[in-house]
Image (cartoon, rainbow over all chains, first blue to last red; front, top):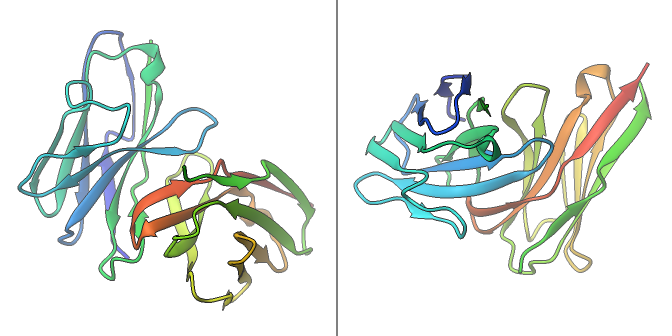
Length: 114
Length: 111
């Protein structure tokens, strides 16, 4: 399995500001994913981040709101732009395992927007 | 579309077995997964099963898959207080990609 870290682990932000979340993996991986988990809810995929190409966004998520970078095979960032209280969620990154059979998740970033 | 359903709550006594159930609708699922989320933590992969298998056992965990009925279950033997968490069932159509998660089952283990 991969060891995944996220920064920050939690943050409280003001409405209208932006926050960039970092995801670091201890090995090179082809595919990284960003999910949102709203309070008391399940996980929803925001986008798939591939190195060297633009992220692929799921229905309901747009690049202007959630820009993603993937500069190399061990790192990705997700920015939550122009935040509103509805963006208060846990944001999780995950990576495709080496056998490409499963995903391993980071610890999550807990975001509260006031 | 794809849908994964689970009961939302389960309570068991310490030492008993827990059985968490999941149903899914996508007959083209390749793998099915169980993840555990403890309070304030990310998701921990517990186990997964390929869609052409019907059972997988790993220490206290037993996964049963009924592909005909699209039903997946996770049995935890000798449930401990440390097993209290939310358990998510997930299925993928494309090996490790295109995950669809269920709503999660909150397991409470009573002393």
